[in-house]
Image (cartoon, rainbow, N blue to C red):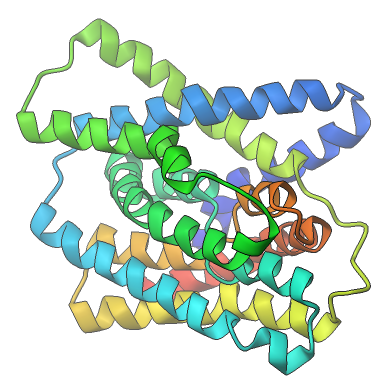
Length: 299
């Protein structure tokens, strides 16, 4: 219960974002601009600031990355049979396949920071930075017949990956951050969590469940992402002997709901975007219950 209470403020911000989007009539342009600010400025500042301030034990970070990779691979493997098991249409399956393993970095960084401070943010940054490329490659591979996305160009421009690489390079070089710059990045980092979680809530879409996507398939994919993937992460943590912050971060990573970027990718490639939006939204709400439970298991 104590873990759930610790995470309650973060989840409350998500719900507040949902309410504000539908009551204040600020317009789609406002929320789109806010999401771009978070994605291109605030969260990269949070990652870079945490990575430059925190000692990273790279001998332990390698097993952490391996645990995340194994959990992600389990999600991919379990999502693959969904089409035949539930007789999904091709358009629905190729879009919703990614909902079995993609992860919401915003929520991950927020929860990691709440529970473990800068050390948690740095560990989550390293893990997410390492897993974004394979998760995106698998998603685009499944969607290749429905659009044209230049994957490597997009990965090279991903601000979260760039901030992670820059922060690690700075950390390894042993540079000292000027106090004024550190304070500036700290202010941006403080704003990133609040605004990032508000945008997650604003993006929730609970209406428009597609007729082409069977209920059984949707329940199955939610179970894969919120039950099977964190279970795989937990087993990997035990098998690899991870402890402390890194063990917690690995399980948090596995228990994260699907990222909203999965919907954007499906839309851009002409697949079933509405089904993905529903899975992301319901999965995010359910993760408010399942994520604390998984953290209680690892505690």
